[in-house]
Length: 69
Image 1 (cartoon, helix red, strand yellow):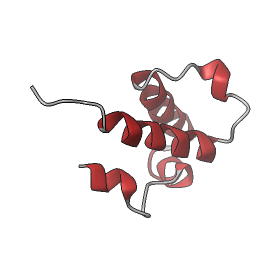
Image 2 (cartoon, rainbow, N blue to C red):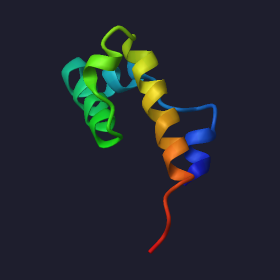
Image 3 (tube, one colour):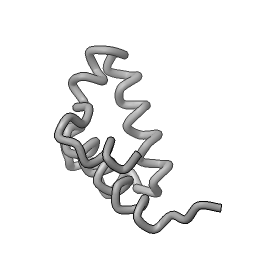
Image 4 (cartoon, one colour):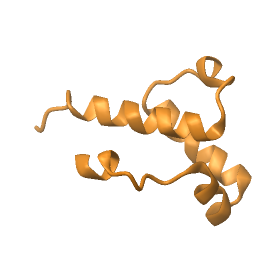
């Protein structure tokens, strides 16, 4: 699963937007951010592309610290 986040072919915001529409793409991005504990006020000055890259990077980093039960 970690390899999915480290590959060069991460989904881009434009691809989400093309597939699901702008509102749904933003909802997906915001849901991922909330899941990872990112406060919206900290990322509002970033582009949607950068925000998506940021959340994927954080997900990758957080996976290193998760344990299996």
